[in-house]
Length: 187
Length: 154
Image (cartoon, rainbow over all chains, first blue to last red; front, top):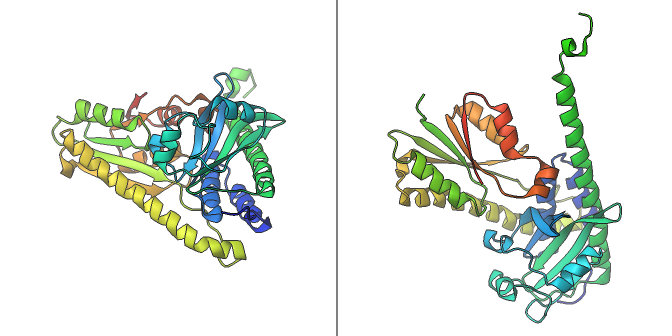
């Protein structure tokens, strides 16, 4: 596949509208993975959240990938993971000819031909990853990688926004539970 | 009160098998127990497929995605066969496969209230960070429902 540009303003509009339609992070993230798989005609897409204590990625949403594959753990090598923590995109155009995969056989069994992984950042810190899987060799253009970085930054904002919203709701429910008698208010 | 209606929340994870083993060993031998295996899927996003070129191209891809979601429904039906292998009578197993409109916990709570289940079996993955962002399903279910036994497999 040549390095044709697949991500344009129409796709951005589609994706951001889908993001704006939901205040639920899981639904939003699932819609994003579905739309990216459909629009880019790729095999699958996964959004991970990063556990900063363990330096491990947890699956937040995924589409097109088997449960077995997702539970295999990180499939990128130390070298690739180090790049990810530095906030750099990882592009593996041919998964069958690379030393950057930790479990190449699993990738082969899953039918993965190429992987593109971009960091999800918030305020300059990596909080997750957006990973796209193609069934064939994928010579993704630099511009599309840049577009994915922009998309991932917005996912980072959405993750943070929905978490803050959840915290606010919890505060509201807690405040609603407070009886006036506990505040020594006059009836 | 004897447990007669059980809801098993199935999420296509590695803990599902453990939950199935728990359900069959704890309830499979009981007379008249009805088991409902439940999965709420994320429906495809509503988009105007004639609005632009990219969305027009998407039409075919979205049909393919719909088929993949339907495949999930078949996978859920196959779970009943797995349960039957563990000794649960096939006629006592039902499946519910619905599009999710809210968070999973709310979908489980709504179904439990509508159908009046005596027991709910959940599985809880050890995903600390996704729980931080998305919330804990088991915590919300336990804190909301009354007069229901909630078992969590972890």
